[in-house]
Length: 223
Image (tube, rainbow, N blue to C red; front, side, top):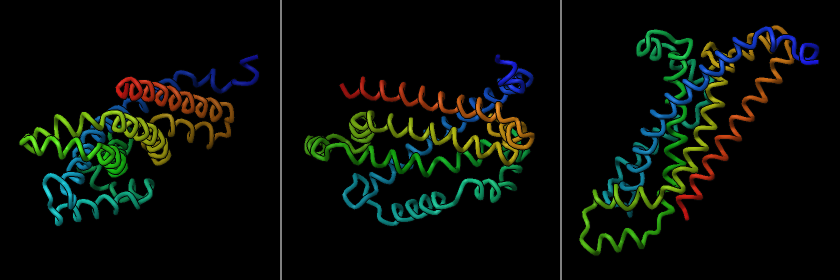
């Protein structure tokens, strides 16, 4: 029965597993770099606002403009724009290494905006009370602002990770490797519909597992 409906999956199953592992590697590396960078940018955006701890209108506007510019560029076009930079930085513009750079640059603006909203949801009264007690601004940022925003930050990071899976798939269509490249090379180009179906199922399951784990972690911290 399986051989009848999924002949190509059985034949190229090992290649599919390798492609999935490549996707996991890309998401983990780009996610770690992107989440860390995005959180830093989000904190800077929040503390340099008009009512922020370190009000700096010029820096806030410049950073906000840069983030908005990169957010407005479609990922496929961004990959093409970064070909030379990626090749210079990683030595290649294809494969896993070639996909990580555009994935990081593509996800950082998205993460920074989501993390910014999570940080802004922290009760301003808590911050004001800390400042009234003479607590240093640096302590407030690292020991009050960020910890208080953890549930929202976790949810934003989960959403960003799911978006990264989508970016990795798109990167695969332009030579980035991973499950996206596998689906295009076999499922689309060779009309192997069973491979296309299975790759979609794998991606759907991956997204649901990540979302479920993220929600549990956020709810646990909230309680």
